[in-house]
Image (cartoon, rainbow, N blue to C red; front, side):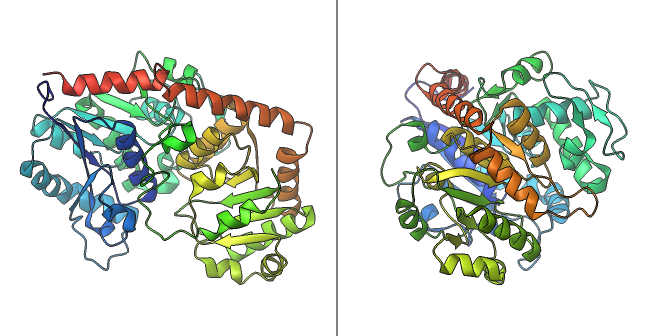
Length: 455
């Protein structure tokens, strides 16, 4: 397996054209940077024109390759449609890239379950880079491999008891499992569970000290190998090439002026709000949160996509004009979270954002919507202990101003706020130690490198 001593080891990474898939792969390559390791990141042609100029720089740690997804250029690429098309043409089109160059290992995201079979057909060892929590992997595995009993997933308030996890309700499970998401998605996750037979390593963007009990609980089933946090080295106190410091493969141009604005704000005075790269806030939701910020008298930095929706809300316009806050369409989240002016993060609880807030030691207001976000919110609040959960009203299902105010106060000034900040600081230090030489994740990365380079 792998290359002979002195030869270069070539690793092919495969990801879909989503921000949350591409960046963990890029960070993975950066943390595995060695003189004898060479990385190629393959994704669908849809990403070719969307990737920012970062992808074109000569200092990037990976080569880029693109393969057709089988859909017309103007297709909106609904996730179900994309998965169905890739199930038909993905293997054939990816194989063309593999046949052009010798690869010693293939690393894939979990939502391309056809990739491990391609790797097996070419006699190339395969790893999955799991881009969600170890807890989410445990839930998926136990459900689809039928190792543990689950209740009727149609009934959202039914309880679910699983090893090393808090007592969950069905509504806390990853939404891709639920019948409401449709048969196509459920089929995709079942295919992922089945593809694990062709997978030699399950690498996870987490670290042992963060999810130790969950990791141990999987050791006799399908062992998971934490190799994170996969963040920019500067967040871990590691100096790196200035040309790459904090850079991502961004699909949108980021607004950098917000950093100058943050520099003028007092320490721990700004609420940072972002609901990720996919979800779009409704004008009503924006108005509710904006009113709560105004009532609390706190400054804010808010990512709203598309930006025009935020600009349509009068109370938000007024606050921006008064200098109480800044609205941007996209930003360098790692740099924002690590800024001393940030007091808390109102977030959707996607795993990449969850890891970044853990590494920067920022308490959270968790407002999840779908996929793994509800489970991540439970982890942030009930396991990691660094935040509170913001919930819609039980009667009309709408977010209320009072609820937003309650949550912001709880993480910034409330009686439990100091404990959340202390715990957040502890996890920040634990994350740095995990990736430092001799740390738990660093040892796992070294072991993986040894596996793929031994002949």
